[in-house]
Length: 225
Image (cartoon, rainbow, N blue to C red):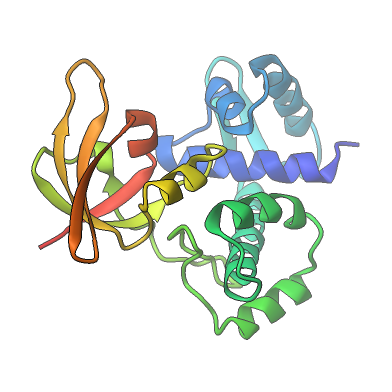
C-alpha cells in the first residue's frame, strides 16, 4: 500500500509538469519534488501498477495522468489553493508561509470542509500567488501571464502570478518589494545567461534591481500600457 500523502504529492507535481510540457519526465519530477530521480522512478513504477490507475508510465519517455488521476490532482490543487487563500485572508500569513503550511494541511481536510472554506471566502478565483482555484467541478480560469524571461528589453509589465515552488523565493521577492500587481519595466537581459534588470515602481519611486533567470522564469507578467 502506497502512502496516500506521497501519492497526492506526485499527482499534483505530475499535473503541473503535464500542463506545462505535455508530460512529466522523471528528471523534472525529481527536481519538482526535491528527491532523487531513482526514488521517483521507483515510486512511479509502483503507482503505475496500482488500481485504480492514476498514471500511465512509459520507460525513458515520461508520465501522464489518466482521467481519474487528473481529477484527483485537480482536487488536491483546489484544497491547496483554497487553504493558501484562507491562511492569508483570515489568519494574515505571508505568501511564503501559506504555501508551506498548505503543503502539509492539504492532505488532511475533507471535501466538506474545503467547500465550507470556499463559501466563507466568497468563492475566490485566484490564490495569493495568482494561481487559479478550481471550482467544485474542477473547472478553473486559465493561468494568467507569461514568464518574465520571455519578454523583450524595455517592455513595461505588471506581475499577475508567481510560481512558489522554490523554497525561500517568495521571502526574497518580499525583500525586493516585488509582488502581485507590481509594475515595472524590463530594462535588459544580461548576456550569457546573466541576470535580468528590472525598474520597479513602488508608489512615487522607481528603483532598479537585478534578479536571476531561474527566479525570473517563475514570475508571470502581462504587458502594461
